[in-house]
Length: 224
Image (cartoon, rainbow, N blue to C red; front, side, top):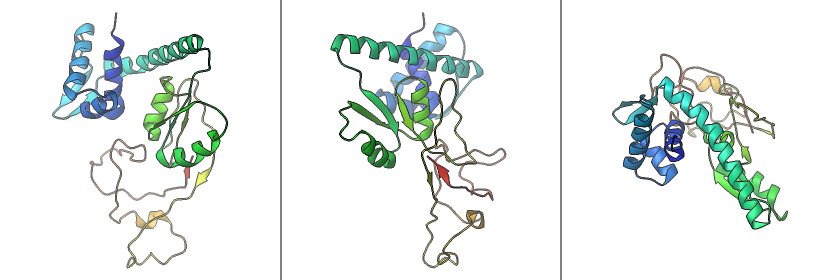
């Protein structure tokens, strides 16, 4: 019988891309997470992670197991909520995953004064969608770019709430700083303050290297 704690550890490694990131999400030490994954590999007799220094990548077997794990965690979360609701005689808390700015505005306005017991988990779109798939939250507030669309699976349904315009922040001395509107493609060859490779707005392009300047592309307004 597979240990759920070990499955959860592997799944967090898959979500965060590093042992350290998984350890912070689980409030474990990196050593503890590594031991959990190693124990899971021994249980199954297969390699689940390819380890290269500090970076790790899931093997084909690891990806298959993580996909199954999300369904298992969803069932467990639903069961736990049902049992607690029966024992407590009150409906379970409404759980929301949201990025910070939406949590402080959209979510706060939606739940204010309605008497709901609401728990908000701060998460970027990639992580929020994973939490939703695993049943750890009831709804997720996400954002996406046209060229990096979200990929929901199973029974998840995306409902657009609004379009948010993109603003380019330039030095005052930049030739394009005074323009009232700007095509971001015109800035493709400029140095950018970039996101991390694990961010949902950081696509990894075939043939490109991490840390390289972005290729020329047109960026459309994000959709929330």
